[in-house]
Image (cartoon, rainbow, N blue to C red; front, side):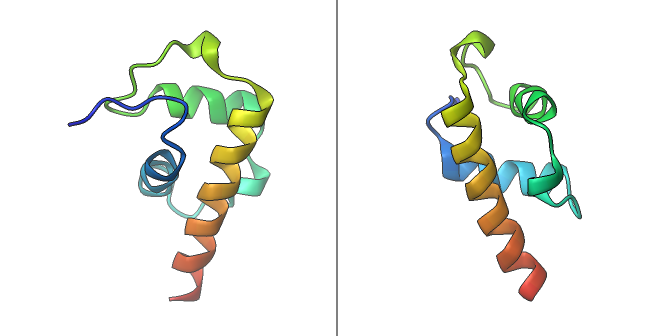
Length: 72
């Protein structure tokens, strides 16, 4: 399994969708999102390297994935 970091936005979005099915990403607080990302298998980046911009990018990518799944 490849190592994941804060810039692997699309892969993180897919993994979050799989790990938290049925959760509307827009309802997730950044504190929870941060924790969920750092708990994903293969995530090896320093948790202190995140910021609001990175978390927002992950949340938006996850939301796009979630919307696609909801339309199926």
